Image (cartoon, rainbow, N blue to C red):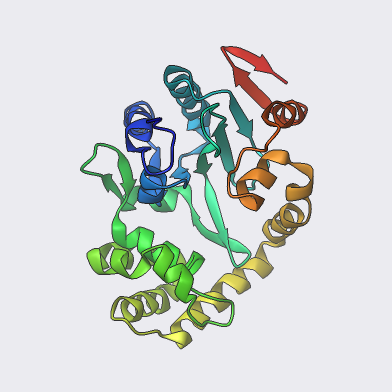
Length: 272
């Protein structure tokens, strides 16, 4: 059985995560480890921009060692670096997204430095965000709607309630990233963990994020430009976000198109 097949990827990903934990003091996995290990999800990581070249090198070496290249380097998603392997024996891409910041409701949900005090070691040997912190960020990203009501499917699919219940202290610590809305963020998390929903608290956090957007209009402008143009102009973004990481049927033609606008590493050579 190929270990690039969905449901069999733990042994494929773990060596990379171990290497990055050792080689990059700031690197950490911030969400969704299990969906990458047991499904077709990506590795959602964070690292300071200064470590991105080392992260890229480690990813390329891992892909070469495991025979899952070529590797594509994409910078088109704001606030991050996306490293994508294109294995010949899989229908889906292998992706690691590396964030320096994450946008929610038009303003930063977090910046990299916010995550450092929230990290710890996973029993499997890699650095990751503690469960409560992951749960709080996913509560905002996946579990809530613009009108303050719950996104029940997002809460279920992303295991938000379980994460919050595992580590309520981690959620409280992560709430500090919400500044004056921290108390509302804690209230929203505690309500969700109890199986309830505090719409007023969620609306307060949303209002705080929107006010920050008004103070940082360039962030919103970059995000709008990405949403309007990136999927149409970048074949990598289109595959990652619009086609559930499926490798196009004509793999070689797609790779040639990608190479026109991206660095592509194949067998130790660089195509540009």
